[in-house]
Image (cartoon, rainbow, N blue to C red):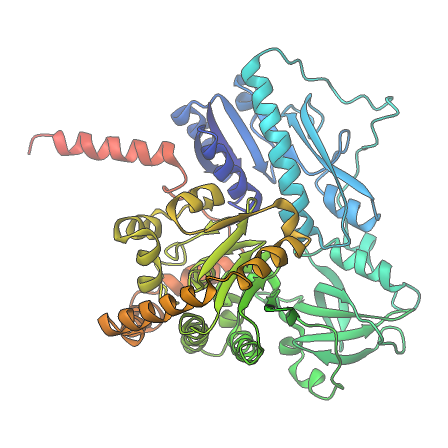
Length: 568
């Protein structure tokens, strides 16, 4: 079918649907919901069988939803209505929630239901639930709905509020007053639910050190306590704040002022946090061992890796290599494996160009360490998605494993034509060949694991359970470590590394990449700095990129051909 994805932005759910729909051989194009006129134009140009609204902030124009099936993916159970569905589910402590695919009508979220799916709620942030459980349920429900439309035999029912099985109800927006924390009386669990209900948008409004801020990235702080509301410790970029019965770590905050950025708490409160005692418990980087296998975790917020985090991760990796293991598995985090350099910290720096340079060199240092590890096998286990430099960092390992739900964005160009480094000019062609490497980096499109497996970017597809339960990863890694042929494989690894180094040293690849990156950071073209600023400050795009809007790129190509035929 011809399916137009209508979205406010190309977020994680929209990317997942885009990948899966194309994998199922649907013809897909994307239009950003900028205004009604552009939406109407997109529908006229593409003439879709279905308009699938995966992430909207406005109603679909009436003439559009009256003209053809328009399906809205709503992150709530059947009968639920309102823009804060998932916020309310988190803050209310729901045990089960769901996704409903309904037909767009005049009344928001009130149309006939084409499909729905439910899931068990985790104790997690709204954004984490959205990326994982909501995305999985949305995929299942959307594919069911599309199949029912194709069959022509299904009549979608309307939610009946009088039905005892319909738990959903209409609710207004979740406001800051609904989430407000009473630090003197709220228990840790309540505080966590309130902050998590607003993570990553809009953040929970609060006050710290006399400044109004938004709070994000909250975790239980075990074995810590103090005067409720007091900030009592620091650890790894986070600060601990006492609750009525314990404490919570707050990893990121954003001051409530114009152009303020979401940053690690100790960076925002550098002076205030400097005098706090060091605590333990907020640990994005951790290491564990199971027999001959070491597992290095790095669950960085939103997958971004700052200069300091790259350096800390590099030190942790060096320490892991001192252990008597045969295989090291780089686990990343459960939501993101890595998205490369930390654009937020870069944007906040006194000189974003200088910080960009420090950050790319720090991640390059870590990538080189992985490439030059020849005394054991290194595996990248992608339980969460990866983008830009994070994808190429994974390719530095000997094997890349990934869950089916993972989405890869193996390109840099959307960030103001950024050239990229992480030794990608060495790593990518040896995996997929020069022609495919060129196509991948130019395409600017998300990629699913099925396609990545076919191309050779991914070596093993992990079972769905591996995202939450690492035992299946540990089992495969242990089998690899105990394989009698491991020594021969390591010998071949050393031989190939020596041959590659003789043919062209790693230092040469890095120098060439960084020469191009230096132009991005310090050159006359400000595209990278403009794109980074717009991304960090969430400035909406004024048009849909032609790489996504196939209906517009086709029209542009047709106009170009027509123009070329005109007589001079």
